[in-house]
Length: 289
Ligand code: PAJ
Image 1 (cartoon, protein in one colour):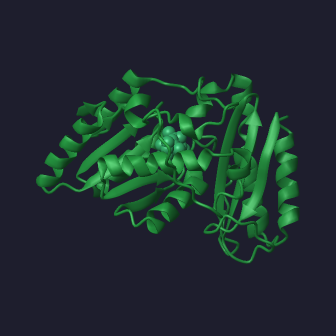
Image 2 (spheres, rainbow, N blue to C red):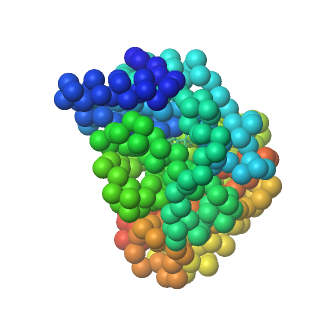
Image 3 (tube, rainbow, N blue to C red):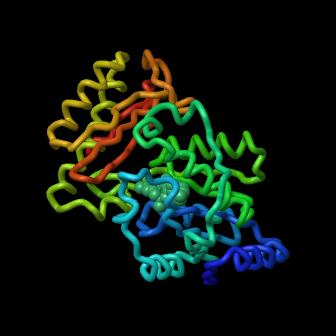
């Protein structure tokens, strides 16, 4: 496995791989890798023949009051996991390598970012879209992999890629969960044992929403109230949102008459957790967890 900290090294390795006819797959991450990240790498290994993982805690997608400084980091552990997972190249840039001190350009995807995490995290999706556009330009992958756990992020990147004619195929991958249902996240490492137990309410609320909708509930408000009730039992520091939106536009739906994205963002202690479930009202048998 190669490790590159500078852009010319990445370009060179990718150029050689491409000259050998390899299909380049990119998995962008912020590190502290877990089974969710590894599932993206596995997906990349299935249909690409040269797998690049970027590990970069991107400062521009964190707000001034957010957890950039305490975001977990483990470079040595991440490199081991990448090597074991069969990654070909890891890109580990410094801030100086990624951003010129007078960088003045950013990518803004409008509309999709007006709801859910957008208003709660001003500038967040500009930071994400900009760094992902830069990673696409640095690595020039044929295909890139993103988790559905960050459904709004995936939608933003799909829209940016289409709107800017970036020659990259975007693949969305299913959410990987702990055995009890908690969505895997690097931020889970910041939870105390008690907060970890309380964090399960996110998934419990989503499952309840799915049960209600699949049992025939079509009123958005009724589903949201049930979810608030479950979430409030964990005494969250704050509920940023609990919403039911159209999975393509991310806009709130009025009536549940087609597949909907049920999504929530909740703070347990100082840790902000998000999760979502795509619910088909015509679907069968909700999970029993
Ligand atoms: P990060 O949170 O490290 O996530 C990297 C990728 O892993 C994202 O595509 C995310 O959706 C996916 N992922 C995280 N948890 C997952 C889970 N439980 N199941 C499946 N996939 C999961 O998302 C980012 O980093 C950044 O915003 C980034 C795109 C790298 C830009 O900086």
